[in-house]
Length: 121
Image 1 (cartoon, rainbow, N blue to C red):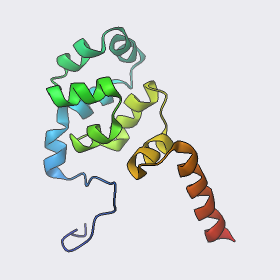
Image 2: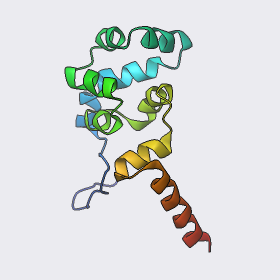
Image 3: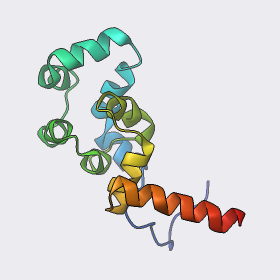
Image 4: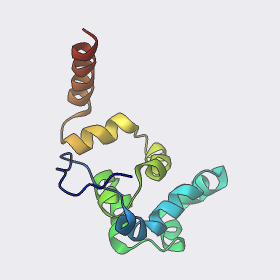
């Protein structure tokens, strides 16, 4: 694996490395639990109790309540695990990309289309 030393981060992204994995362990473990339908139902029935059951921090629980994906990423969430949670909120990867870019979903989709046209045209 290449080192990121000396590299400029991509604006709007969070680097997920060992420290972030430790920080987000409980959050990611909870999100992994959503692979089972009964766990998704238990979460929907009482979100806060479900978050407490998995040991989420106060900040993580607040971000879940606000549906703040960027905060969840900054609190150690791994996008692959968070996809299960955000899917229950009705959000897809383009919604998250728009949040990361700080633009509306419509503008983000237009940006993707324009990039594809430039690349393919």
